Length: 320
Image (tube, rainbow, N blue to C red):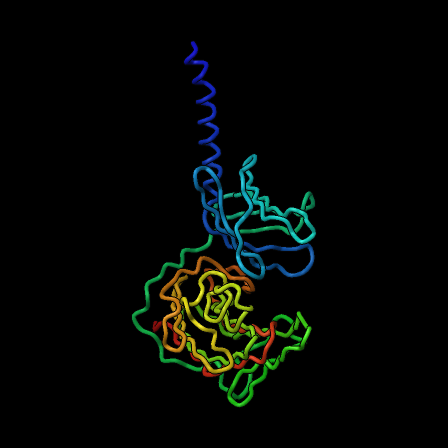
């Protein structure tokens, strides 16, 4: 009798643990998220969840800046509750999500007890494609004469981009003491899937810009002060730092040669390997959208500071 009395609660705990594990499993993996506030435009975020020793762990890429680890996550009554940590006001931010099936998430972002933006997510695509056997001949994306094929985005009323002396220039000098310069970014009107990109840039000392691949993955240009290598010249922003010992070498022309196939990217700077076929886990901060399966434009950051100059921008795509 004693064995039966002891076995029953053990069995119950095992069954509860199994059910909890099954409930959690459908939420695991990478998710391309879209956040829709009550007013304003929807914006992208990204989330990855894993499980270790029965505990849900993960990371989130917010709208801007670097990704960060979640504070915690649990499945409660079939819903996933993700703790993102406190916001500046001190209120805890949580995502409450359901998985209605077909690899989708729906839910709400809560600030304390108050409902905020709605959330929608889709399973991030694998984007596992072989390297193309042949590429087209490089063609210019910028003719050096005007902004044909490019358009400002963001704060378009404060557009500082001009074509000058064969260069695409963000004529936005830093103003001492000014923290938010608010100038426009610029993107190509054409969208691309897999490609080989050549681009040259001259970023002044203290300048800060970025080259967004498909409008989602930032190749860092310039500096954010040198505290984090993954935020410095040549980094895949917040994901991969430049090689150990690499110098920013700002204030002079430098070239990037970028090959992006699926979600794997190779980057050479002035012929030196910086990133060798590394996987892009998800979009970086500042992405235009989270639609990773779709082609996207190139976009150049102009909303930071410094007179950033680009030239000799060419692209090759897989031959059909």
